[in-house]
Amino acid sequence: MKIKNGLRLIAIGFIFTLVNINITFDQTQINIMPDFIGWILIGAASVMLKEYTKKNPFYLIGAILLALCDAAILVVRLVLPKLDISIYETGVSLFSILYIFLLLSKLEKIGKDKGYNDVNSVRILKYVYLIVYLIFQALTFAADYLPIRVLAVLFSISGIAALVTAIATAFVLFKMSIQIDE
Image 1 (cartoon, rainbow, N blue to C red):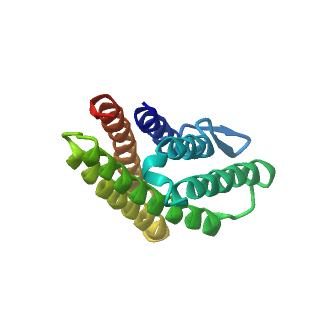
Image 2 (image 1 turned 90 degrees about the vertical axis):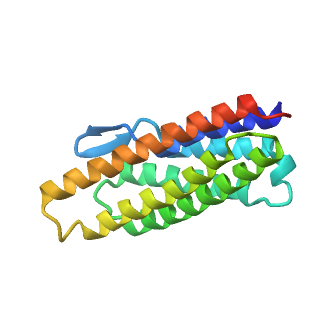
Image 3 (image 1 turned 45 degrees about the vertical axis):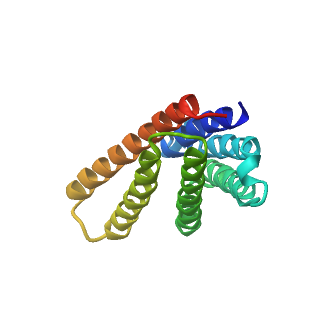
């Protein structure tokens, strides 16, 4: 039952880490679904998956580090909204995509071991995350060279792709938690 609950926690954690609902106050944007909550849930889930993660503390330590970094970003944005922390955010973003890729690889293995019949969905999502992330980063770097309207359309499309990917991942993980043999 712990593995099933761990998968559900990860699904909810992905929703928090990948869905941003921003509210603007005095030129400061605040995400009402803070990423650090998602990383805390994913870290708690890695403890529930100890059968698969006990030999590799990366899953727990990585989630804790990401939670701390994202909480720090939130605080800095609130306290010092004019401070440019984009390099720091890019570093955290790089680490998070690596973490997500490795976590989905681990979940793929769990699915295989526990008799989940749609493991290919997890594998596909792992690569979709990577592609969406790379596109988003490319757009960020190209922002100075593209007309604002084109950039807005491309960011909207990549944002929608990220949202669909997050929802699809949550769906697949909930489905896996129902169908696996524990």
